[in-house]
Each structure stands twice: as structure tokens, then as C-alpha cells.
Image 1 (tube, protein in one colour):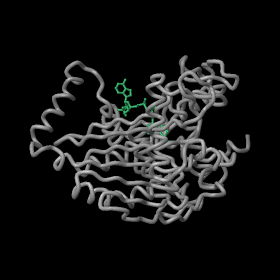
Image 2 (cartoon, protein in one colour; image 1 turned 90 degrees about the horizontal axis):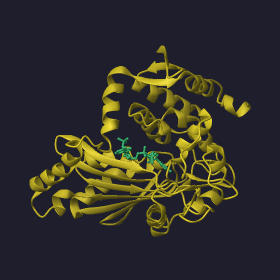
Image 3 (tube, protein in one colour; image 1 turned 180 degrees about the vertical axis):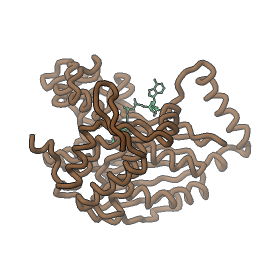
Image 4 (cartoon, protein in one colour; image 1 turned 60 degrees about the vertical axis):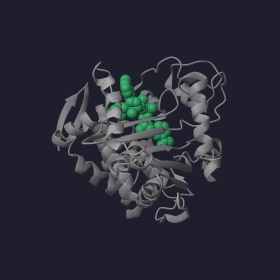
Length: 353
Ligand code: NDP
């Protein structure tokens, strides 16, 4: 470990493997079984490596406190059900979604490659994660992937001020021959809630148009927007996509909406509890027998970005990954010390403030 100063803040420089080990030891000390702890530690390390800091070590204290929720099952073993030739369901049994995804992925792959399309429905999960790691895992198996979840009801539709749906992430991935896949993954709110929370921590304001305060007045104060309501991106269009996600990853698969997730939480302020919908498509079976031509068409589309020096989603992550794999990752020293304190005492020093 090396200490450095960057951006006016002290940081420690650690290797990606150390991030994983640190996260795993903290989660295990919090009582999580290996089935539950390992995939969460993996996502935290992957997000730190790809400089997706909102789902990196910063979220580890939240993962620990979610695991203390009265309804969380720390040693949950997901249960898989083959519903139809095209549908696999995994009941997370009140553990994290990631353990359920890990179990469902091989069956999703096998079904999609047999039928051209397959659906993985995850139920009864506490949800901490960026969705891109799951989508990348699907693309690595030469499948196209789509994933979505509700969250807690923090977001109001365009023209309204009362939150009724979540920050509802949506992610999509396309496998590319000889290259890392094209992946996008975003919250359907203007800003991800974790980014607003980070602005609050740093004492900075957020851009106009992200949300309203508790009285329904537009605000750039992150604390006030966190108390009030966030807005979905793109006005009524983003609100419609968020609504679709509520329906597809909620009632369609027999699981909770974001409002129901919030009620289920009962004020304990844990991660959302609901379902997740994952769809895999096989380009070989759907491509009308012209796999190579179809790949070339897709590449032409991507070249339309790079030819103009426009940013292709996921390229920033891959560049960060290459850097982190050789140089390690910079973690703010205050966060690092906070996590070490949780690992040693089981108590978040922030809780004492
Ligand atoms: P961002 O707005 O940071 O990024 C969204 C996507 O757009 C990424 O794929 C990113 O690629 C790409 N992108 C960003 N900026 C540009 C640009 N200027 N030009 C082209 N592409 C761009 O994501 P969000 O803040 O909305 O979401 C962050 C994460 O939070 C996601 O991983 C999401 O899954 C997660 N989340 C999870 C929730 C949950 O309940 N589990 C709820 C809400 C969000 P790149 O990755 O290369 O930067």
C-alpha cells in the first residue's frame, strides 16, 4: 500500500486483488456466508477497478448495514426453478441478487443458446449492484444481454413532485468479435442516487433539473433533493422507461414495485428489495444465418462513434480497467480507514457521529 495526495485529498494506492480481499473480509465479518459475500466483493472490486466509484468501496458500509436488515438472510442459498424451456427463476431467498444471478447465469446461457431467447427472473432479492458486470458476463458467453430492476421509490414522474418509482437501472450489452463488448448501464433518474449522496458528502451542489425539495420546489441542494424527489431523465420519455422497468421487473415476474420495496424496508434504510429481469438473446440463432455480416454491420455502427471521436459507452471503463490492472486503484484515505475500522470492530465509525 502506498500513500499519495490527489485532488487535495489523501489517498492510498492498493491493488485490485486487495480491494476484493478487503471487501470479502468485511462482508464475512458482518456475518455473510461465502455464497453471499463473494459475488458482492467481486462487484465492489470490479467497480473500483473500472472507476465506477458509486458502486465500489464507497458502498461497502451500506452493504454491511443492509445485511443487518431484520429481513435479510445472511446465509441465504438461492433456489433455482426451471419454469419453462425459455424461463429460469431464481429465488434469492432474501439474500443479495448477485448470488442468485451467479446461480442462474449458466442455465440462462444454456436456454438462450437452445432457443434464441431466454429470461432469468430473480425474485426476493436485496439489490446492491451496478448491472454492467452481469451484462458483461452474458456478452462473454456470446449472447446479447438486457437487465433491469426497480429500486426504492425516490423518483417522481415528469410534471409531478411525489416519488412513485425508483432510479430503475437499465443495462444492455452486445458481444463483439475479438473486442470487449459494447455495454451501457444507467439509472433512469437524471443522476444516480449514489452520485447525489456523494455530492452531499463533498458539500457540492448538483445540476438544475435533478429533482425537487420536500415542498416540491426545484433544488440544486443534494440534501434537499434526497429528502424530496428525484426526476427521471428525458422528461416524460425517461418516466415511461422507468415505468416499463417497474412493470417488467416487478408485477411481470411476481415481485415488488419500488413503492412496495420502500414499504417493505420499514424505515430501516437498507438497499431495495424486489426482483430483477435479465434477458439473453443468441445472435447466432436470431441472425438469419449471416453472423459475420451482422457483426460487421454492428461494427460499422460503433465506428460511427469512434470516427467522430464521440465516446462509446463502456470504453471509459475498459481504459480505467487497463490502468487499474497495472497501477492499482486510488482510494480516499478517509474511506480506507473507515473500512478498516469496520473490519476490525464491526462498527461503522460514521454511526457514532
Ligand atoms: P452514467 O451516467 O455514469 O453512465 C451511463 C452509461 O452511459 C454508461 O454506460 C457510461 O459508459 C455511458 N456514458 C456516460 N457518459 C457518457 C458520455 N458522455 N458519452 C457516452 N457515453 C457515456 O451512469 P448512472 O450514473 O446513470 O448509473 C451509474 C450506475 O448506477 C450504473 O452502473 C447503474 O447500474 C447503477 N445503478 C444501480 C441501481 C440499483 O438499484 N441497483 C439504481 C441506479 C443506478 P461508461 O461506463 O464507459 O462510463
